[in-house]
Amino acid sequence: MSARILDGAAVARQIRAELGPAVAAFAARAGRPPGLGIVLVGDNPASEIYVRNKLKAAGEAGLRADLSRLPATAPVADLLEIVERLNRSEAHDGILVQSPLPQAMGSDAERRVFDLIRPDKDVDGFHPVNVGRLVQNRATLVAGTPSGIIELLERSNITIAGARVVIIGRSDIVGKPTALLLLHRHATVTMCHSRTKNLPRVAAEADILVVAMGRPAFVTKAFVKPGATVIDVGVNRLTDRADVERILAAGSKGRQDFEERGSVLVGDVHPEVAEVAGALTPVPGGVGPLTIAMLLKNTLRAAQERAG
Ligand code: NAP
Image (cartoon, rainbow, N blue to C red; front, side, top):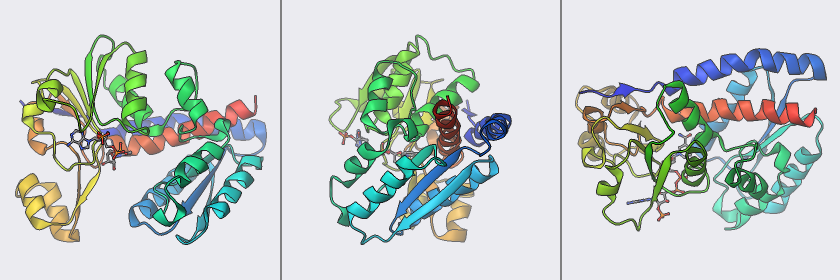
């Protein structure tokens, strides 16, 4: 058996196409497009790529997107000032501060910054008010990756209600909100983490297995019930040839990418899982594109709600 590949890039294109008319209608009514303010601190290469992709996608969807940049050495006060300016701005409906912030800003910088963003402009869904509303299953802005996972499952006709779901990873940005969204859709959810005992055995009970660990190819066939749906959230860049040869088959697209560029992206799920899973998201091209599509959707929604 070979798993059905869940094409996140195609679903993301579909969502973005659906947004087009609603964005145009908002712009016609409000006399301005929905606006997104993005803040990038430092020059982390991965963040540069994420931000470039977000700006491009926002522009293509008809949104206004502005980038504010600060050097890695900037004090956190400078960043808080930019957030306050965006909080007050009439032209910006959504605010996104790209994480991670440079370590020099201090260990509590992310929390201070995310807490300062107005909840009604918090298109990343990280503010405690929005997290609380999510816990209570009230309409709110939800983080893009978890809500993208739901869109992908629903649009792929994978039944959530009654399904046994196992999530490996309990982060605030992926694991926990994904668990809540699935719980509200009547799945039976088990959360796993680094202290979970018998992890492969627990994971193998899942009808839907969501993996968000940041550990390249950690999840092997032993973790997967035959026919299960596997959602691979992990994004790991491999640069070491031995790792690449251990994980990716000779002649595969990933191996070719590595030979051409000297690095390749892999998920947390080993490619051998395609032999047992019923459905599987690829990396890249699975969950990643949905995260951006949901950011755009959240920005439109924030704009509509702010406009009443
Ligand atoms: P994170 O905050 O580092 O959390 C990782 C989680 O995995 C933690 O809960 C950790 O357990 C658990 N874990 C790590 N090693 C484990 C092990 N050996 N056994 C069991 N559990 C283990 O990571 P994150 O921010 O959620 O991101 C996870 C991955 O998703 C990363 O690769 C990230 O790049 C990717 N990601 C992708 C997108 C996207 O758009 N596609 C968006 C966000 C994140 P403890 O809590 O016990 O430490």
